[in-house]
Amino acid sequence: MALLFLAVAGTAPTAAQSLFGIRITQLYLSAMPTWIYNGFTEDGDGTPVQGSDVSPLRMSFGGGFELRLTDTLSVEPDIWMLMQEYIALRDYDKTVPTQIETGNQVGDIANTLTLALSVPVVYTFSPAAVPNWEFDGSAGLALIYRIPVAGIDNSRAGPVGRYWIAGRFIYPHLGVAADYRFTDRVQVGGGLTWYVPIYNIWGRNEASPFLDETMLRYGLRVRWRIGNS
Image (tube, rainbow, N blue to C red; front, side, top):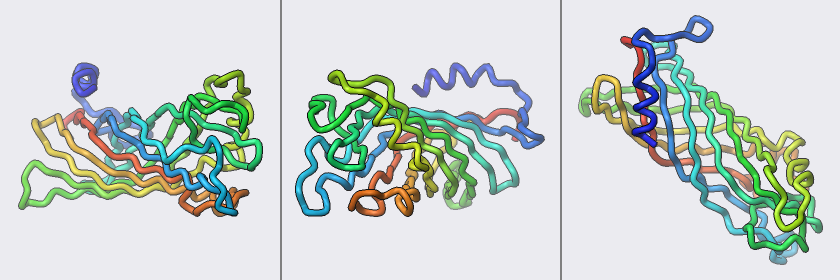
């Protein structure tokens, strides 16, 4: 993944580009496991919910760019994606992670592409005590869409997709990261981002924790500086 990124980034122009007059100073790619918390494995009576899987961990891939505002502040729009099976339960007003082996007796199952569009504001600092290291703190808003790709086991994909329409795709998020500068242009590091399902304030129709469907995305990223900034 990193080698592919460096090959592509090597074609970047030597002068920093801009978006709406703001400099694009870096490009980056990420490869990160993403943990999806499923808090609806039991209903309000404590009965196990058939077809509802334990909280899955899936590999996700993404990329983005840095819009430099000041020496320490930037905006870093990015996009990432993963695949996960979901089931629209017939006995509950809920769509939850499941496994491909789950039969459609308890609901319609679909293989789903999760597509996240994120715009964080990032604060970066470089302590003099640790040369070549940069540390980030970020906060922002993500729109995370689950797009049904195909029904499984003769299921209809529509019921899975309809569940997410009622605003169940809005995620504020917080993140931390650290990057080590290998060369003047290349940084390699890691980060952790917590995506908060704020739509549970208005969109919980079943008894479940507020953080049900929260996501933690953590892992590696490669950054490539463009231009002279």
